[in-house]
Length: 58
Image 1 (cartoon, rainbow, N blue to C red):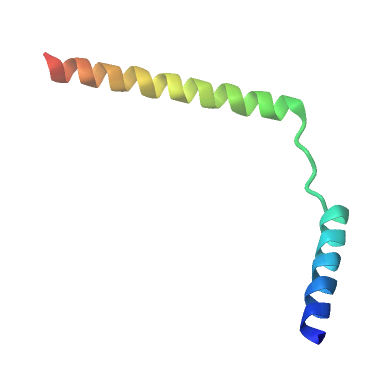
Image 2: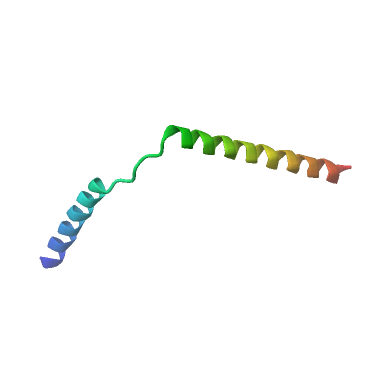
């Protein structure tokens, strides 16, 4: 009986701590900036890959 009481108590304490210490959300500008950077990197990578494939096919 003591084991289950400890499991339930631990889960309630961890749930309460999770609500108190929630991670803060990032501002929208930072999210948009990182999305733009990721998009640019993906475009550069695809451009380089297509060049290499075209060179290989020649």
